[in-house]
Length: 81
Image 1: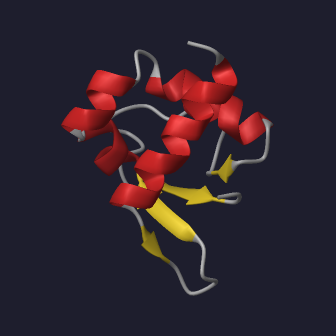
Image 2: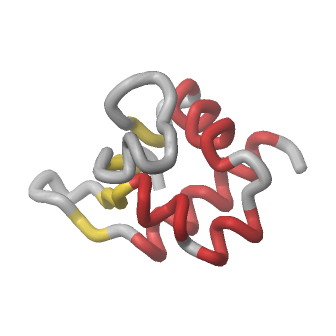
């Protein structure tokens, strides 16, 4: 799969699992994304897809790298739909 396609799939999954914050942006906790069965089947490397999406300013989150367990409560914010 190419990166652009994976980012499009990521946007769909964030929209499916997330909810709107006070600013009207869709957010989802990293732990929710990581533990979702559908996401696990779609993404071989969820963390890599998230990093690529952050570089393209499609999503934003605290830090450079998200790790399961340690960063489960970090919000992933969708910047572009």
